Image 1: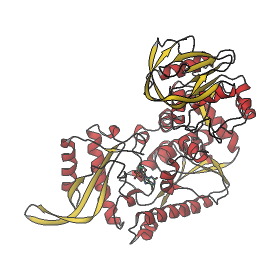
Image 2: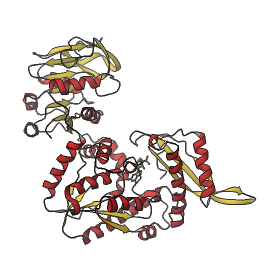
Image 3: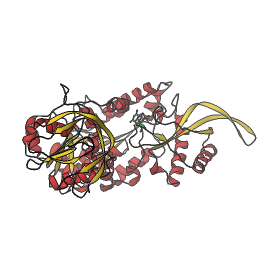
Image 4: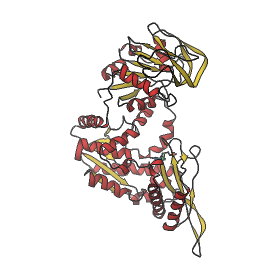
Amino acid sequence: MKEHILIIDFGSQYSQLIARRVREYKVYCEICTPEISPDRIRKMKPRGIIFSGGPSSLTQKNAPRCDPAIFELGIPLLGICYGMQLIADHFQGNVGKASSREYGRTELFIDDSTDLFNGLGKKIVTWMSHEDKVIDPPAGFKPLAHTRNSAVASFADRKKRIFGVQFHPEVVHTPQGKEILRNFLFEVCGCKGLWTMRHFITESIRQIRSEVGNGQVVLGLSGGVDSSVAAVLLHRALGKRLHCIFVNNGLLRTGEAEKVQETFARHFHMNFHYIDAEKQFLRQLKDVIDPERKRKIIGRLFVRVFEREAKKLKNIGFLAQGTLYPDVIESCSVFGGPSAMIKSHHNVGGLPKKMDLKLIEPLKYLFKDEVRLLGLELGLPEDVINRHPFPGPGLAVRIIGEVTKERCEILRQADWRLIEEIKKAGWYKKIWQAFTVLLPVKSVGVMGDERTYENVVAIRAVTSLDGMTADWARMPSGLLARISNRIINEVKGVNRVAYDISSKPPATIEWE
Ligand code: XMP
């Protein structure tokens, strides 16, 4: 990557947000921990470095610091909040406790708009969150802005090209923060904004080819966005040397297996291995009710089936995975955020560790929305790109109680009608996930003159940004009525539909 920004993460909850903002300006960036060595940075040749904020105080003994030589690399540097205090401390300014901490919306008065604040006027709204502050800037550093409580809310040593801001330009609560970051990237670092998906594709293909050499690669294709995009990218680079294994576990939605085959085998002409393992999965799930046991059984069996198929292929040297950047950051973060824990039970699609294959992860520097853009650029159909997430254990965690072929079929029939109506009403894209859940209770109803005693289906439809928190979707009552009518009239075995109106937390998105 020719034009590149390095973000050093001092434990900020906003580090990924800084990265998103930088990439929005078409400048490639990576996040690393403070342990990074100056030598490594020299080799990477970034155009600029950004120090994130962080929860620590420099007065604490084990507050995170980086190698002091990083300040002397001659690379432009922007310190945000704690990052600014680190800069001040390194160059022997005075950092101390603020007499009154600044938190939330704070007015910033701009005293120097030469570069960082170019084009922003005299006063802007910023978001602050700090107890310590820079009391005196180090020698050579000039204050650029102040607030009512901080005389030095931003500073710069222009000769060294080092800047600091006490507030968070990356959050939406600093409405003009984007412009400040843009000024840093373009005015200070001299970036041009060259990073496009096309550029990423060319670069990735080159990298994949050099990594794989003459080798062969196997990929577990689920039909979800990440593995689908990884498949198409790898296929561009390797052609028939990529082998995709698709396991039909019998827990998929209507038409899903066919759609995946049509897209990858027939449209893209990939080496596509379709494994029908429905019977095995349903056999092992017989009489199993506990959700976690279901997950474990499905996860383990998936690995076994995948391994068996992969072993049949000759000369495989690499295992490809559609890992995304947030997972990489979480798993290597020295600060080990709580999100790492929350997600652990979701990794049932985990792939064999003992296969002795080298791992290849072509999407590991991308965020989800970038993966979607990449998929479109690679020619994947829009309905594959914009699909709602679907859990690895599939319908098994949407059938409360025992999973049988018949119950899967009832759920499939209901789910398909729900999605069709939501799409027709133009609601599919507004919703993070929508699906039906089959309950283990029966209820009394009446059809014609007959009393019925049939299944209950619950509809779950939520809005969310990342799946971590969610709210139930306020779908119009007319749409809900159409969905309910269709399911009850058309799906044999269902006589009642309920709408789940719980938010996450405290409820989860899936029922199991
Ligand atoms: P919950 O139910 O925890 O789900 O609110 C959050 C997101 O994760 C998906 N999910 C899973 N994905 N394997 C997966 O691959 C799982 O076991 C699993 N459980 C939940 C869920 O669909 C939602 O998008």
